[in-house]
Image (cartoon, rainbow, N blue to C red):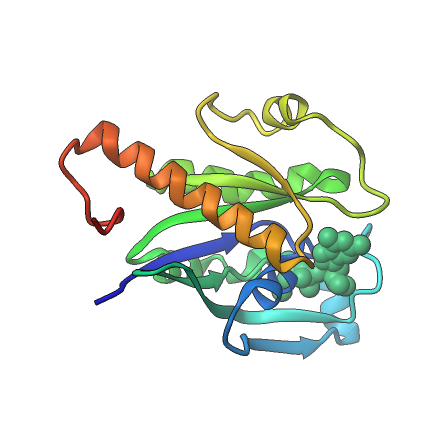
Length: 192
Ligand SMILES: Nc1nc2c(ncn2[C@@H]2O[C@H](COP(=O)(O)OP(=O)(O)O)[C@@H](O)[C@H]2O)c(=O)[nH]1
Ligand SMILES: [Mg+2]
């Protein structure tokens, strides 16, 4: 029986969550998008977000087999503040999260970092490299997001299946290493 693990993909509006889940999912990702109406353009902060004409109102859902016996179910969190009430619901049963960050708007990822720190849910940072993004070093990003030194920061391209998969592999490795520290005999995630 393969082990199925629930993972959240979080980060600010327009950071690339839907793109990430779509690129990496081996099933056609479920998305609930609505066209940005004039009204939601006023509500959603679209400044600095290019070519974005849709916004995810509910969530993205996808699945990826990392290796034999380990399947990740990916749940993209809604990016807008007005959907915060869904986060508790979505985090239920999740083992870990990827917080995507856009170097042009790093602060947009603060709320997700805060939320997972608060809940004690292990997370890593995936820095989605937009063409006109800034070339910060991993250390600069770590400082800007005020991360503990043990939290992995991985550069990625959310449009690339391989790159997104590498981020998820890093997360799994991070979850396993945290588990080893807290529960030396837990091998559930390792599956061996
Ligand atoms: N150049 C570039 N564009 C990207 C990248 N990731 C996402 N995008 C684009 O940025 C916009 C926002 O991405 P989306 O996945 O909808 O963001 P979400 O709000 O976090 O779900 C879309 O138009 C994507 O095509 C990337 O790595 N590079
Ligand atoms: Mg989206």
